[in-house]
Length: 351
Image (cartoon, rainbow, N blue to C red; front, side, top):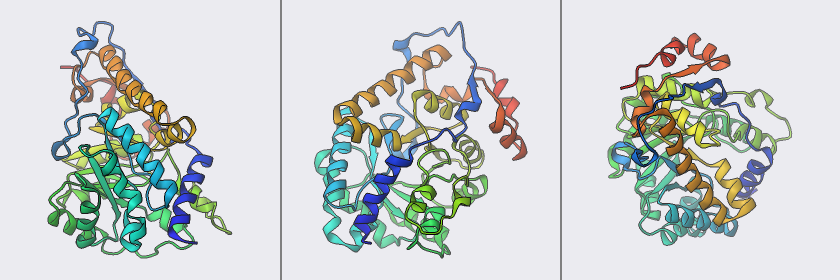
């Protein structure tokens, strides 16, 4: 099977396997503020994301590229939606185009459709600094994601089996590039241990890419004769991964993995995230209902964020970290067993 055929398989199986609610956001209850003291017009959703300089706290996360005409058309649609709404967009892994120049068009289209937008390139942790520079130049990227996909590779029939040297390559890429580097998990979460190692490199951000969204183990198992079912429930749920990463990583923390609504995004910010990437839900809107509906979805998300900020009495996104929230259920148990104190979230004092 060619790489392009595999990319199209990923999209098809992502649509068919769907998303569950395993990210643990349902275990978080926000504490309503009956006297918020602000109005809707007072709120701002401009995030503080350091060198990433995002205009919106919502971005289109990595999904597509390298699948020939099919992914070219989808990337073009996503790029136009990003341009219309002013949000950032990440492309899927560009390794396909580095190995097969005929696939470059499916990535280059995003810069043609969105010439002034904030675009994020993407490569795996096997990439060299030279390849990283080429990926940035390919789409005029404003930042580069380095994705970690150990579980996907292990489940993939033709996947990699050796992951030595990844941290050193990431540090080298961060030192060599002139654009910020983001390290992103692909659906199995960044643990405290991994985030602490990444804090010792020059990267600008971690994207926790937690368990609970598109499950690449389930997708790759659709392509296997012998299923590795033990990986279906593997990983750090997104809500827990945000807390773990935030506790040790000093830079920007991005939330992704099973985020399906503005309420999930708000809860991510309450836990410590700075911005949130959506892939699966945006992909479904784009494929099922088209470009216009995707644009509507993005605008509704941003409006809903401001609605909830008003109800919580917070003018700025950063202030959400002071908002009390009650954590219960499996997330409470998980955090407690990992040495965190869930009750501290419930007893925060708003500024």
